[in-house]
Image 1 (cartoon, rainbow, N blue to C red):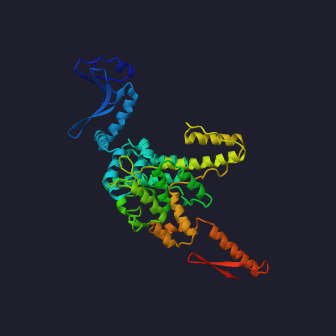
Image 2 (cartoon, helix red, strand yellow):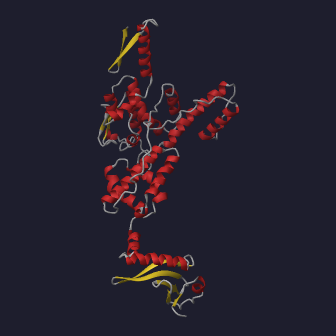
Length: 450
């Protein structure tokens, strides 16, 4: 049989298998440079064979029968068109093969940039694992498009986490920015993706929630978690700083905790209240002499890691207490089952309350996060008359703008001022008896009779 014929499925399938150690090559009569190679194992593969300078290029197109002769001709014509314009598809393919994937690039980003300049680099690792590894981790960086990244942003947003979507976008945009800096890319595919609008979070523990919170916390069996939450609340420090709190940075005599580096890039001295000092002194007396971390653990890093599950356990315990109280107030009883977990008991309490048609509004402290402990400290300082400068310094804020949120968290001072002003106006207009006018100056209230 001639080694040149029109490629068809029937003709190719009928080609004989070469002798062991041999391979045969055939050429299509319709597209001159389209070839088919058959090995002694029976593998049939389409190629474009074309000279590029001094190099004879064998550009692999695909295997038969997955690729049909018609598809092979179309791909061959595309490749030959690229050759005609001075391009070498084979060289481009080799370059693509050597090009890093996004996972490779992210690994370099961590070692060459994040670990050297960002205290939050472990959070970057978590964002990569949770949101980026599956959709783009294995993709070559030149093949990642704005559409790919926009789809990730939209997907996270749809799950109800628009702020997280923005932070993930900030991360992959930064990674591509470093790739441009290192000469691996010439554009940032994240450019043009719009951020979701963000609102300042204003959640903190309310006066009626504090007794409940402390009761649920005191019932927490894990002493390390219990103390961690107390120190986070009593210092207003960021979770990551409390988790990595070292004994060498704590001066129990002067009552000062020095954080070597905060998120703002600056060290911070945190005054320790008597309540915080009591917690730390007890932990120090129970710790080994050579203990490094205040909240030590047996993990690889040596200190407490993600406490989110324990945090939900505290909220679950409070909800269970509230439901149990309402069930008992209705002359019923929630039986105690020794082998049940907290989660199982809570589920049973919810079902019991539903069957009894009890009002369960307010039984759970909703939308409360660990970071809200920090916000709670700021808000209660504002509530008790501290200036923004003092609040900002205690929380390690670099700008007053970052602190301003705490001046509007609690509506009670605003409401009091408005009521007082309204009463004064009504009195001045002869509509009501004269009222006491409260003047607020530098956080202290002085009474003055109108």
